[in-house]
Image (cartoon, rainbow, N blue to C red; front, top):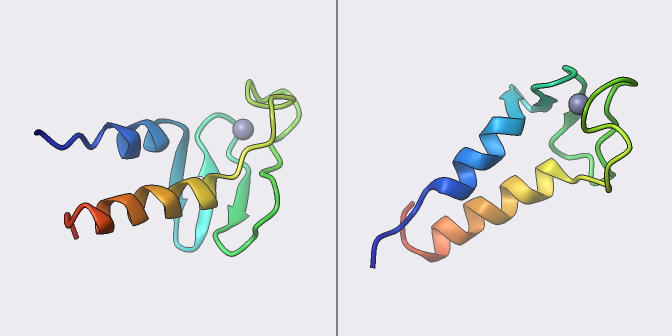
Amino acid sequence: MSVTYLPLEAWNKHWTLDGSLVRCRLCGSVQDLTDAGAFRHALGCKAWGLQAQYPSGELAALLQQKIQAGLF
Ligand SMILES: [Zn+2]
């Protein structure tokens, strides 16, 4: 069975890390990795008004999956 890295690549299409900050690639808004609240996009961002997003939690879940799969 081949292991895919696609989920992490997909995450990285929308978000980027700047130190301990998660940044939206579309609007440039940031949120600290330790902030468990929903991400707040800038007005006018394509992702603004969509369902609540938790990029920090998503990244943690992705990394956790990789650890459990023995990739790290
Ligand atoms: Zn945004």
